[in-house]
Length: 384
Image (cartoon, rainbow, N blue to C red):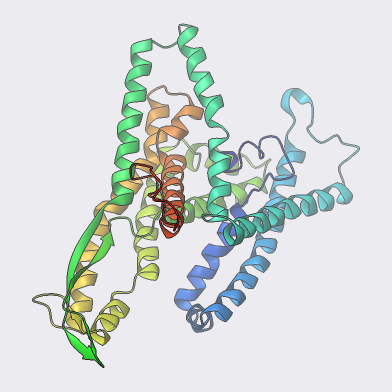
């Protein structure tokens, strides 16, 4: 599962084996601290200066987490000996190999973090999300090739394969619906005269998304679920730890799927509470003279919005959890693990979410430059 996010670099013991996941883990820690520690909560409200400090703390946390995970990777590498041939020769092992490998893996993660920040600042889309997206997509051609070999080799019937592909199409459509689904709340603005101009008197809408948190609950839950495997990697010779790692916290185990689904539901509500504050929305509406028909401004409006947001987040979080554990179900039904990871789960949710977000940003840039964009006929309006 970890290897899925880094495009196979983990299984190859590459320089970028840790990928960008330590940065995601550090971001989770900062988000949690912002909800419980007043200092970090204050930084989140200080605008640009606060954002710079949070980014700096996140970088420090990334280095610390990378060093911890790298030490586990080195311990695992030195314990691997397939067919009696150790991956790391006995003559190479030592403090020098241990420290140099940790530094190399940490440096690779820091380079990925820097690259993601450059993409966000100078490109289009979220650079960190795009790096994860590319790491996932890089393995898709190989998964399709394996499926084709099963059909040509007679291992799987062509009709069964077509049914699997059609079912995958329906699941992709369902993920798009969950990602794009919204509940619109009408807001009426009263007319007010400022100088010689008249403002308000129109009806607008507050779009409450079914999946307000986007792909973040999946990333949060996956990062937390990596923790047991990292702890188990420090005890490669312990039979009890290996039993827990393989049978209870293995990617295909039902225990893993159940805990994973609960974590997704929890983080969906958690991140929604951080990303969308009904009280702030109600206060801004009241200052601008807006109100929801039939609802009093202020506290009653905040409670009304919070009630609707809670109701629509529940089916959204359950839908995310079901889609996230679909690969495990498909593996149980005989689908190859490589292709099952694209059938649903984290990979599909991240791919759809990042693709839609990036497409919307590209669309907004095109509209700002007086192009029709992707959703229109595609004709240029011309420059004047």
